[in-house]
Image (tube, rainbow, N blue to C red; front, side, top):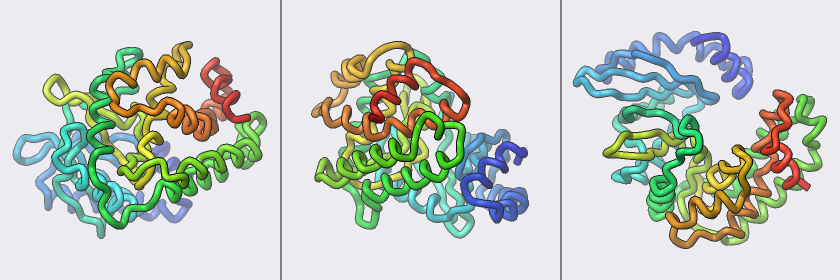
Length: 292
């Protein structure tokens, strides 16, 4: 694990996670022997380590490890609820005592965030339709729980940051209340992916298409999962309506006003990192206008 990856985990979990980082090579070696894996690459992450592996059977596999075992259990529970959904990565093995999940490998596995303007909207619509059609199992947290967690993490990151000069804590709190109102007004009862941005959707090739990974699942309003998609055209100078027009033909029951309300409620979360980097792009300005 490089210094940058270690720093991200310390920022998320605190200094104590350094012990986990130090022990990671031993853990990986043990799991690789058990599951017949050879590690060939590593991917960055904010909650753990993702390792691309070759299986002894010649098949690509992905080993995910996290120091927070509850994250592994939650992710695996959602993926197993979506078992058989072609638009979702499938679980092969788990070892929750080690915070480990073994997943199928996706080829070529390119993130859709690298697709630029060439978003496969029909595939994204099918992905959303598939995951939201599955009956939620018992024991999942609510979308309200997810909103509380997200805004708690955002508040911690905003205090004392460069972004706070532009995005005040009062603005963040106003957005939090909007999000909580949407999460608790009976807007739906689907499994919500919870982190369905283009970086968490991979290209599975001509036979598979768009495949979702890395859920942070809850149960509630499925419109929550659309905010990262309908705002994509705004990054290239378009409008929110352009995003609606792109996804609506591929998503039965699309509720534009509901999705718009979520975009407004989540707008501070879109701009915190760009503002920390000193970016004031038209997209950032548009998102900031939603914060009032």
